[in-house]
Length: 68
Image (tube, rainbow, N blue to C red; front, side, top):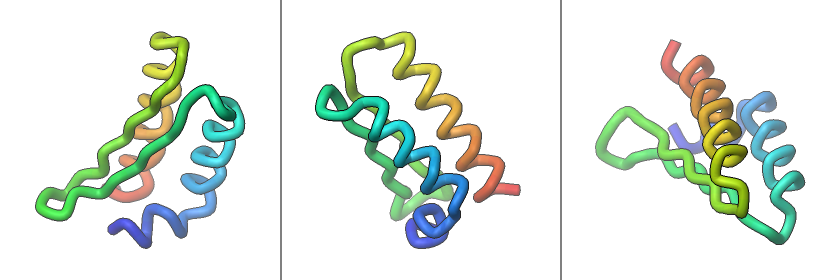
């Protein structure tokens, strides 16, 4: 699942956009579970509300792409 997530161009594009947005003030972590059919999405940074919105958008995209 990890390779498939990172190979999807739309998911990869959103991850790069979020990394660029956060720059050196935060990070994006995407981690597929090794035991469950899920992908963990974590964003760290300064603005909690904005991070939550961005994390939900990314998680929604991954869910639509990976778990159709």
